[in-house]
Amino acid sequence: MIRRADERPPDAIERLRRENARLRRELEREKADQVRIERERAQLKRENTRLKD
Image (cartoon, rainbow, N blue to C red; front, side, top):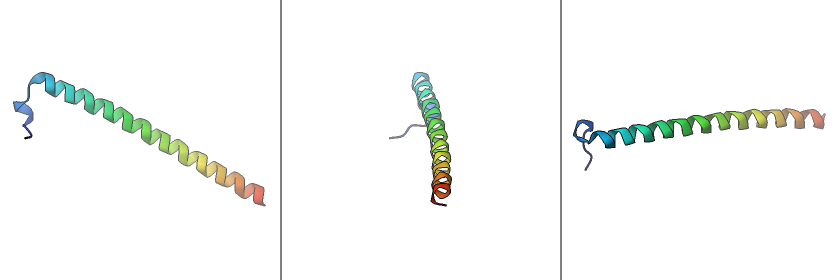
């Protein structure tokens, strides 16, 4: 059963906040990695096109 936030003990709430913050940081790192990968892919495609010509 899910309890409302005001029914949870304060240490449990703090633990959940820390977990949320950790997950948020992890997501931001993954987004940054994805951007980097897309840029590398685009660069390689440009290079391949140039080499074909």
